Every structure is written in structure tokens, then in C-alpha cells.
Length: 291
Image (cartoon, rainbow, N blue to C red; front, side, top):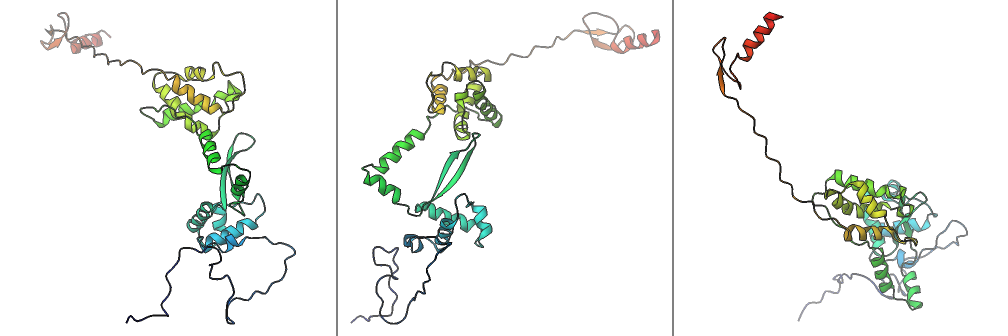
């Protein structure tokens, strides 16, 4: 007969669902947690148990999630600020923030502010699935809608230069940044400029000057407003790409003329000259004596 071990620890489980959490449901005996509850009237934050008791988040991630939800709008929640607030350090804080992003409690969005600058804002979600559920209740398909938005946001590919040197890409970036001075509708974001710069560099690499590239991009713009100017420029850079310049073989070096040897009439030294006479040293000595 096999020996049973009633005191052996149970197998570890990866998570808890429904009412199977070990701290839920009635407990027998007199041990366990007792709550001493005083009602809050000021300075409190409502936190869902789905965060406070999340079965897959680490304790640091849960703590940071609670802390972030308690902060007022506009507060700084970047890694550097949180690492200065808590003793865990930047590496562990960054890992905990990634956990919260993975489970939908944080979302990062790039937004254009007045002046054209792009900033990253952090959105704290106290109920990660609420927005998705609202879409489903309205009969929308969130997955399909998200895929359509991603396809709409993605810019068409552009040509690539054979030798993308930093100088060439910097010159291409300057061309794109200067388009708005000639066509205000072609104001590009930093992200769009970085995407289009290799395409402009491919033109510059084909012996097309910056002025000619600019004219090709701003000429005959549609009369209506441009919803996505970067997409139009990407199409033009690809469809109007000029051919490679013809190969030019380097010119052969010009041979140096070699005169025949002559014998100096003064010192009998041999020297090269088209006609008989005196060598260079003897001519210099005669000029010195005359002076």
C-alpha cells in the first residue's frame, strides 16, 4: 500500500479564477484576517479588487498601480520620478510599469501639443476592460476596429539609400523640415520625418539636389485639405523615384611629357630639356652673378 502524505504542500497554481482565491469565501476557526474599518470622508481613492488582488501582477506592480491611480491628473509618472519616490530602483520600477501595461492598467499615447512638438502621455485605466466592453455592447468589433486603425496609421514604405550615411540622412531631414516654409500643409511630425528621411536620401543619392527634391514634393498638391500629408509624400517619393545616374568611368591620368637628356654646356651635367643649353643650377648661378 502506498504511503499518503496529508501534510505535503499542494501543487502551485498559476492563477485564481472566480471564487477560488484563497482569501475568498467563509473560513472556519478563529484565525485569519479581521478588518477594522473607519469610513473615509476625504483624501481617498477607490481601487478595484481586480488590481489589489491581481493573481499575475507582482507586489511592486500592484503598489505602483494603486499609487498612480491615487495621483491627480498631470502628475509625473515616468520611471525617473517613480524611482526617486520609491526605494526599488529604476530597473524594478520599469519592469513593474511594463506589467501594468501588459494587463491594461497603463497606456502610453503620443500627442501633438501646440507648437508641433510630440509628447508621450501616460493614461491610467482603473478598469482595463471597460472600454472594450462598451464597444462590444454597441455591437462593434474592437479587434477589427483596432486593426483598421493600425493600418490607417501605418505610412507606406519609402525607398532606401544604398549608403545611408549620417550626413545624407541629416540633409534629407533638413529638406523635409523646410517643406512647411513653402507649403504650410506639409507640416510634418518628428515621427513622420524620420520615416520619410530615407526616401529623400535615396533621391539625393541619385544626384538630385535638395531644391529639385523639394519641388517634386510640393508641386501640384491636391486642392483639398491633406488629411495625412506624410502618406502623400511617401507615395511621391516612391512613385517618382528618379533612375540611378549613368556610370561614369574615371578619366585616365594625363601622362607627363618627358624631354630627352641634354649635356650642360658649362658643367657637362646631364639634364632633361627640349633643347641644348645649360642645366638649372648653372642658369641660377648666371642669374646670381648678374644680380
